[in-house]
Length: 418
Figure 1 (cartoon, rainbow, N blue to C red):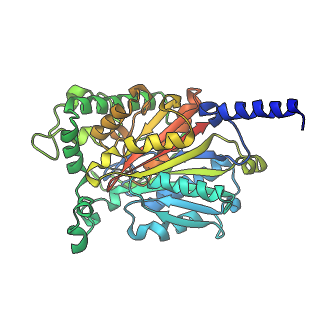
Figure 2 (tube, rainbow, N blue to C red):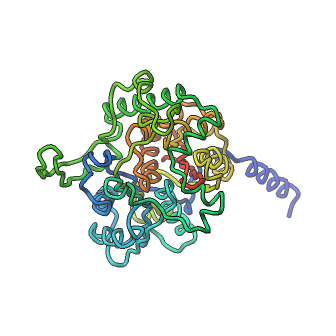
Figure 3 (cartoon, rainbow, N blue to C red):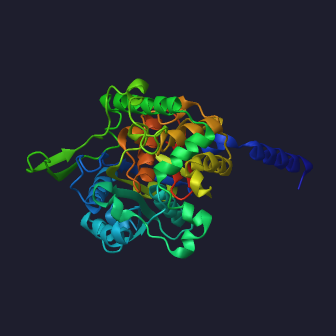
């Protein structure tokens, strides 16, 4: 081998080693895990919104049918479907398999239900992505669904054994979310003024986006039965917009709401995520498979992180999970164009964003769960459709989805729009 050739190879190696960060992330390779369709139903108010009388499995059928119609995917090539859900009886395994069959997926498509609390929808996507990477399947769907109208309430309280009750950190896992978030806000010095300002901004961004039609592309309209609470008349309605979004919300109007968990507290219904219903689904495969099947690629899954934090500091999850995901992706926080961070409570969203040093203008540009709801198992998959749609609209590329997770965890994932 000549010295000149060796020198050429050495220079090439140096150039390759220097190629990192966002430039490397934007490269396209046959083995990339890509998204060819991501959508959601509207999100409606728990107990009184458009989906109050619709079972979670029926929401899922609607999302699945819309996914097939929009992507033009042949249902017979889908090999596995993972569905995140938190409250469904029996974990939802039976209903979700039935939902897949009802949506016209053949019996050859396997289905599983999973529960990682508020990150269930994202975990479902990551599980499918990992199966694709490992070559276990060629085409899969990661989805999320929650009917909080039918499943949220006293009946959902977990009973702990004496063994768990007598272990301090284990017992902390059952402290109500509002209580621990109230205590966390006090301990970390997140003021009510900061929380109300963040929450008002979420509403204002969401109403502006809704009025401009910015959610229309990601939402699949769904026709359902609805019983009018005033007349008790059953109607057939088509739900095509988030019904929790409200106009005219300001920090001043939120300041008038009474604290929910402590007389001198800062957390209330107006600066917390809304109880709600909804479903979302994401179609994934390798780039080479998408090209072979003629699927239009809208984005790429890069990597994800899952971390644990103290149960009583559950809200800190994104603060710990996002840096891990960025490091795995080989990028910095400055490389990210949009952050979709779930707004479980304004207190935790504000604290995480400030501690990470993230510009607030990059966070949830179309609003978040405070404005339009947090159907627990759905949110992680809903964020993907919201993120990829907004990245495309604004001609930006790199995004992160993240959320805090009940019992003290955090999850994050990195995405690239195409």
